[in-house]
Length: 119
Image (cartoon, rainbow, N blue to C red):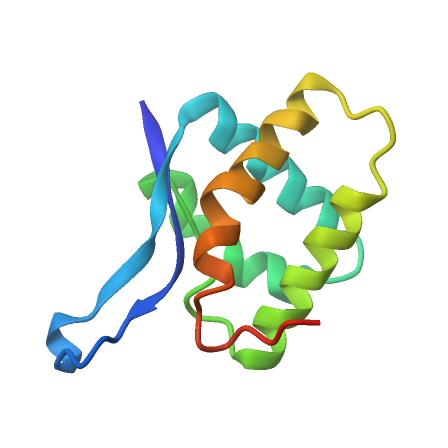
């Protein structure tokens, strides 16, 4: 069993009713590890971002979503996650699993999102 990670909307000349979320499916253990990463990054100083990305609704429907973030929040979240991962010295296997979700599932969609500003 697993869950979904939603990054943004696919708006390639589609009517609004046809928009599809872009993201990927995540294995259950990796999803849990990524959830712990989100907690570590956002809960201490950015609870509002945490609430948007890892909403209570996601606890039951099994998803994390960057869709509702505005451009500023989106780029701030990306920077915070990247900075947190970069500072991990000798990450545990659990932390490595979270990094796989970020690097292999989230990042490809992040950099294609129209809100993304390369830094």
